[in-house]
Length: 316
Image (cartoon, rainbow, N blue to C red):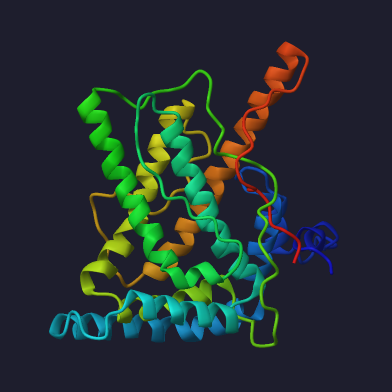
Protein backbone atom coordinates (compact mmCIF):
# COMPACT_ATOMS: atom_id res chain seq x y z
CA UNK A 1 0.00 0.00 0.00
CA UNK A 2 1.27 3.46 -0.92
CA UNK A 3 2.29 5.50 2.10
CA UNK A 4 0.81 8.94 2.70
CA UNK A 5 4.21 10.52 1.98
CA UNK A 6 4.50 8.64 -1.33
CA UNK A 7 0.99 9.81 -2.18
CA UNK A 8 2.14 13.44 -2.08
CA UNK A 9 5.59 12.75 -3.53
CA UNK A 10 3.96 11.22 -6.62
CA UNK A 11 1.13 13.74 -6.95
CA UNK A 12 1.33 15.61 -10.28
CA UNK A 13 1.32 19.39 -10.19
CA UNK A 14 -1.23 21.18 -12.38
CA UNK A 15 -0.29 24.86 -12.54
CA UNK A 16 -3.83 25.67 -13.63
CA UNK A 17 -5.36 23.87 -10.64
CA UNK A 18 -2.69 23.48 -7.93
CA UNK A 19 -3.51 21.18 -5.02
CA UNK A 20 -3.54 23.20 -1.77
CA UNK A 21 -2.52 20.20 0.33
CA UNK A 22 0.46 19.49 -1.94
CA UNK A 23 1.62 23.08 -1.47
CA UNK A 24 1.43 22.77 2.31
CA UNK A 25 3.14 19.37 2.28
CA UNK A 26 6.07 20.66 0.23
CA UNK A 27 6.47 23.79 2.37
CA UNK A 28 9.31 23.38 4.89
CA UNK A 29 8.83 26.61 6.86
CA UNK A 30 6.91 24.68 9.54
CA UNK A 31 8.81 21.93 11.41
CA UNK A 32 6.81 18.72 11.09
CA UNK A 33 7.64 15.04 10.73
CA UNK A 34 7.09 14.29 7.03
CA UNK A 35 5.16 11.05 7.48
CA UNK A 36 2.90 12.62 10.11
CA UNK A 37 2.40 15.71 7.99
CA UNK A 38 1.43 13.62 4.97
CA UNK A 39 -0.99 11.54 7.06
CA UNK A 40 -2.63 14.63 8.53
CA UNK A 41 -2.96 16.47 5.20
CA UNK A 42 -4.32 13.41 3.40
CA UNK A 43 -6.82 13.08 6.25
CA UNK A 44 -7.76 16.75 5.77
CA UNK A 45 -8.38 16.10 2.07
CA UNK A 46 -10.85 13.30 2.80
CA UNK A 47 -14.54 13.41 1.88
CA UNK A 48 -15.38 13.16 5.57
CA UNK A 49 -13.53 16.42 6.27
CA UNK A 50 -15.01 18.14 3.22
CA UNK A 51 -18.65 17.09 3.46
CA UNK A 52 -19.37 15.59 6.89
CA UNK A 53 -17.60 18.12 9.13
CA UNK A 54 -19.63 21.19 8.02
CA UNK A 55 -22.84 19.28 8.78
CA UNK A 56 -21.86 17.75 12.11
CA UNK A 57 -19.90 20.67 13.62
CA UNK A 58 -22.97 22.95 14.22
CA UNK A 59 -24.86 20.07 15.86
CA UNK A 60 -21.87 19.18 18.02
CA UNK A 61 -21.50 22.77 19.22
CA UNK A 62 -25.24 23.06 19.87
CA UNK A 63 -25.00 19.91 21.96
CA UNK A 64 -22.12 21.45 23.95
CA UNK A 65 -24.34 24.45 24.79
CA UNK A 66 -27.25 22.22 25.80
CA UNK A 67 -25.01 20.04 27.94
CA UNK A 68 -23.59 23.14 29.61
CA UNK A 69 -27.09 24.09 30.74
CA UNK A 70 -27.74 20.50 31.80
CA UNK A 71 -24.52 20.42 33.85
CA UNK A 72 -25.56 23.58 35.68
CA UNK A 73 -28.69 21.79 36.89
CA UNK A 74 -27.15 18.36 37.55
CA UNK A 75 -23.37 18.87 37.54
CA UNK A 76 -22.42 15.29 38.47
CA UNK A 77 -25.13 13.19 36.83
CA UNK A 78 -23.97 10.36 34.54
CA UNK A 79 -20.30 11.20 35.18
CA UNK A 80 -17.80 8.39 34.74
CA UNK A 81 -14.31 8.80 33.35
CA UNK A 82 -13.96 5.03 32.86
CA UNK A 83 -17.20 4.84 30.88
CA UNK A 84 -16.14 7.89 28.87
CA UNK A 85 -12.91 6.24 27.80
CA UNK A 86 -14.71 3.01 26.91
CA UNK A 87 -16.96 5.03 24.62
CA UNK A 88 -13.97 6.87 23.12
CA UNK A 89 -12.19 3.55 22.55
CA UNK A 90 -15.22 2.04 20.78
CA UNK A 91 -15.68 5.19 18.70
CA UNK A 92 -12.03 5.26 17.65
CA UNK A 93 -11.97 1.54 16.85
CA UNK A 94 -15.23 1.67 14.89
CA UNK A 95 -15.46 5.03 13.13
CA UNK A 96 -12.13 6.90 13.11
CA UNK A 97 -9.76 6.60 10.13
CA UNK A 98 -6.39 4.81 10.55
CA UNK A 99 -4.46 8.04 9.94
CA UNK A 100 -6.51 9.96 12.50
CA UNK A 101 -6.10 7.23 15.14
CA UNK A 102 -2.36 7.18 14.51
CA UNK A 103 -2.11 10.97 14.91
CA UNK A 104 -4.01 10.76 18.21
CA UNK A 105 -1.68 8.10 19.62
CA UNK A 106 1.36 10.05 18.40
CA UNK A 107 0.18 13.04 20.39
CA UNK A 108 0.51 11.25 23.72
CA UNK A 109 3.96 9.95 22.78
CA UNK A 110 5.29 13.29 21.61
CA UNK A 111 3.72 15.24 24.46
CA UNK A 112 5.44 13.01 26.99
CA UNK A 113 8.78 13.51 25.26
CA UNK A 114 8.43 17.30 25.17
CA UNK A 115 7.77 17.42 28.93
CA UNK A 116 10.78 15.22 29.58
CA UNK A 117 12.96 17.45 27.39
CA UNK A 118 12.02 20.49 29.45
CA UNK A 119 12.58 18.62 32.73
CA UNK A 120 15.96 17.28 31.58
CA UNK A 121 17.16 20.77 30.65
CA UNK A 122 16.31 22.52 33.90
CA UNK A 123 19.27 21.85 36.23
CA UNK A 124 18.39 20.49 39.69
CA UNK A 125 14.70 20.17 38.83
CA UNK A 126 13.29 17.02 40.43
CA UNK A 127 9.94 16.56 38.71
CA UNK A 128 8.10 13.21 38.57
CA UNK A 129 6.81 12.26 35.14
CA UNK A 130 4.14 9.81 34.04
CA UNK A 131 4.93 9.24 30.36
CA UNK A 132 2.21 7.91 28.07
CA UNK A 133 3.49 5.58 25.34
CA UNK A 134 0.47 3.94 23.64
CA UNK A 135 1.13 1.82 20.56
CA UNK A 136 -2.46 0.66 20.02
CA UNK A 137 -5.97 1.67 21.04
CA UNK A 138 -6.21 -0.50 24.17
CA UNK A 139 -4.59 2.07 26.53
CA UNK A 140 -7.41 4.50 25.67
CA UNK A 141 -9.61 2.46 28.00
CA UNK A 142 -7.21 3.26 30.87
CA UNK A 143 -8.33 6.91 31.00
CA UNK A 144 -5.57 7.98 28.61
CA UNK A 145 -7.06 11.38 27.70
CA UNK A 146 -7.73 12.36 31.30
CA UNK A 147 -4.26 11.31 32.47
CA UNK A 148 -2.73 13.34 29.63
CA UNK A 149 -4.46 16.50 30.88
CA UNK A 150 -3.48 15.80 34.49
CA UNK A 151 0.15 15.23 33.44
CA UNK A 152 0.28 18.65 31.83
CA UNK A 153 -1.14 20.52 34.82
CA UNK A 154 0.96 18.58 37.34
CA UNK A 155 4.12 19.23 35.31
CA UNK A 156 3.55 23.01 35.21
CA UNK A 157 2.71 23.12 38.93
CA UNK A 158 5.63 20.91 40.03
CA UNK A 159 8.12 22.68 37.76
CA UNK A 160 7.25 26.14 39.03
CA UNK A 161 7.32 25.00 42.66
CA UNK A 162 10.81 23.62 42.04
CA UNK A 163 11.93 26.87 40.42
CA UNK A 164 10.65 28.92 43.34
CA UNK A 165 11.82 26.68 46.18
CA UNK A 166 15.32 26.18 44.76
CA UNK A 167 15.76 29.66 43.31
CA UNK A 168 16.54 28.39 39.81
CA UNK A 169 15.48 29.66 36.39
CA UNK A 170 14.70 28.22 33.01
CA UNK A 171 17.50 29.57 30.81
CA UNK A 172 19.27 28.81 27.55
CA UNK A 173 21.38 25.66 27.62
CA UNK A 174 24.62 25.72 25.66
CA UNK A 175 24.43 21.96 25.32
CA UNK A 176 20.95 20.48 25.18
CA UNK A 177 19.98 17.15 26.73
CA UNK A 178 18.07 15.20 24.10
CA UNK A 179 17.94 11.86 25.92
CA UNK A 180 14.14 11.97 25.88
CA UNK A 181 13.82 12.96 22.21
CA UNK A 182 14.33 10.25 19.61
CA UNK A 183 13.72 10.25 15.88
CA UNK A 184 13.04 6.62 15.01
CA UNK A 185 9.46 5.72 14.00
CA UNK A 186 6.90 5.19 16.72
CA UNK A 187 6.01 1.47 16.75
CA UNK A 188 2.28 2.07 16.41
CA UNK A 189 0.40 -1.04 15.43
CA UNK A 190 -1.83 -1.08 12.34
CA UNK A 191 -5.12 0.68 13.09
CA UNK A 192 -8.59 -0.75 12.30
CA UNK A 193 -9.33 -0.36 8.60
CA UNK A 194 -12.95 -1.46 8.17
CA UNK A 195 -15.38 0.29 5.87
CA UNK A 196 -16.77 2.10 8.92
CA UNK A 197 -13.37 3.69 9.71
CA UNK A 198 -13.93 6.74 7.54
CA UNK A 199 -14.04 9.68 9.95
CA UNK A 200 -11.20 12.21 9.71
CA UNK A 201 -9.39 13.64 12.73
CA UNK A 202 -11.13 17.01 12.93
CA UNK A 203 -14.63 15.56 12.51
CA UNK A 204 -13.92 12.87 15.09
CA UNK A 205 -12.71 15.43 17.64
CA UNK A 206 -15.75 17.65 17.07
CA UNK A 207 -18.05 14.64 17.60
CA UNK A 208 -16.20 13.32 20.64
CA UNK A 209 -16.05 16.68 22.46
CA UNK A 210 -19.74 16.64 23.57
CA UNK A 211 -19.31 13.01 24.61
CA UNK A 212 -16.31 14.10 26.69
CA UNK A 213 -18.44 16.82 28.27
CA UNK A 214 -21.34 14.45 28.98
CA UNK A 215 -19.35 11.91 30.98
CA UNK A 216 -17.15 14.36 32.90
CA UNK A 217 -18.12 16.71 35.69
CA UNK A 218 -18.37 20.35 34.68
CA UNK A 219 -15.16 21.05 36.60
CA UNK A 220 -13.27 18.24 34.82
CA UNK A 221 -14.44 19.38 31.39
CA UNK A 222 -13.46 23.00 32.02
CA UNK A 223 -10.07 21.88 33.34
CA UNK A 224 -9.53 19.77 30.22
CA UNK A 225 -10.42 22.58 27.81
CA UNK A 226 -8.37 25.16 29.70
CA UNK A 227 -5.33 22.88 29.50
CA UNK A 228 -5.17 23.68 25.78
CA UNK A 229 -3.98 27.19 26.59
CA UNK A 230 -0.91 25.79 28.31
CA UNK A 231 0.46 25.34 24.79
CA UNK A 232 1.82 28.87 25.10
CA UNK A 233 3.43 28.04 28.45
CA UNK A 234 5.16 24.92 27.11
CA UNK A 235 6.28 26.81 24.00
CA UNK A 236 7.82 29.60 26.10
CA UNK A 237 9.65 27.12 28.34
CA UNK A 238 11.09 25.29 25.32
CA UNK A 239 12.11 28.53 23.61
CA UNK A 240 13.95 29.68 26.76
CA UNK A 241 15.90 26.43 26.88
CA UNK A 242 16.67 26.43 23.15
CA UNK A 243 17.43 30.16 23.19
CA UNK A 244 15.20 31.02 20.25
CA UNK A 245 11.52 31.49 19.40
CA UNK A 246 12.28 30.48 15.82
CA UNK A 247 9.28 28.73 14.31
CA UNK A 248 7.42 28.55 17.62
CA UNK A 249 5.07 31.34 16.58
CA UNK A 250 2.27 29.10 15.27
CA UNK A 251 0.86 28.36 18.71
CA UNK A 252 -2.75 29.48 18.51
CA UNK A 253 -4.08 28.42 21.91
CA UNK A 254 -2.82 31.65 23.38
CA UNK A 255 -2.71 33.43 26.73
CA UNK A 256 -3.17 30.90 29.56
CA UNK A 257 -4.56 33.64 31.84
CA UNK A 258 -7.53 34.26 29.53
CA UNK A 259 -9.68 31.10 29.61
CA UNK A 260 -11.94 30.63 26.62
CA UNK A 261 -15.40 29.08 26.45
CA UNK A 262 -15.79 25.37 25.77
CA UNK A 263 -17.71 25.97 22.52
CA UNK A 264 -14.68 25.76 20.21
CA UNK A 265 -12.83 23.14 22.26
CA UNK A 266 -12.78 20.65 19.37
CA UNK A 267 -11.10 23.08 16.97
CA UNK A 268 -8.63 24.18 19.63
CA UNK A 269 -7.79 20.55 20.37
CA UNK A 270 -6.67 20.12 16.75
CA UNK A 271 -4.41 23.17 17.15
CA UNK A 272 -3.06 21.66 20.38
CA UNK A 273 -2.07 18.49 18.55
CA UNK A 274 -0.36 20.40 15.75
CA UNK A 275 1.56 22.56 18.24
CA UNK A 276 2.95 19.42 19.89
CA UNK A 277 3.93 17.95 16.51
CA UNK A 278 5.72 21.15 15.49
CA UNK A 279 7.62 21.55 18.75
CA UNK A 280 8.72 17.92 18.81
CA UNK A 281 9.84 18.09 15.16
CA UNK A 282 11.90 21.19 15.96
CA UNK A 283 13.58 19.38 18.87
CA UNK A 284 14.35 16.40 16.62
CA UNK A 285 15.92 18.79 14.11
CA UNK A 286 18.03 20.45 16.83
CA UNK A 287 19.12 17.07 18.16
CA UNK A 288 20.34 16.04 14.72
CA UNK A 289 22.23 19.30 14.28
CA UNK A 290 23.91 18.91 17.67
CA UNK A 291 24.88 15.32 16.81
CA UNK A 292 26.29 16.46 13.45
CA UNK A 293 28.33 19.15 15.18
CA UNK A 294 29.66 16.58 17.64
CA UNK A 295 30.67 14.28 14.79
CA UNK A 296 32.38 17.16 13.03
CA UNK A 297 34.40 18.01 16.13
CA UNK A 298 35.23 14.50 17.34
CA UNK A 299 35.16 12.66 14.03
CA UNK A 300 32.94 9.94 15.51
CA UNK A 301 29.24 9.52 16.35
CA UNK A 302 28.07 10.68 19.76
CA UNK A 303 25.71 8.42 21.70
CA UNK A 304 23.07 10.63 23.31
CA UNK A 305 20.74 8.00 24.74
CA UNK A 306 18.31 5.58 23.21
CA UNK A 307 14.90 6.48 24.58
CA UNK A 308 11.70 5.14 23.05
CA UNK A 309 10.77 5.10 19.40
CA UNK A 310 9.49 8.46 18.25
CA UNK A 311 9.39 10.79 15.31
CA UNK A 312 7.69 9.03 12.40
CA UNK A 313 4.61 7.01 11.62
CA UNK A 314 4.95 3.29 11.20
CA UNK A 315 3.64 1.93 7.92
CA UNK A 316 0.05 0.80 8.20
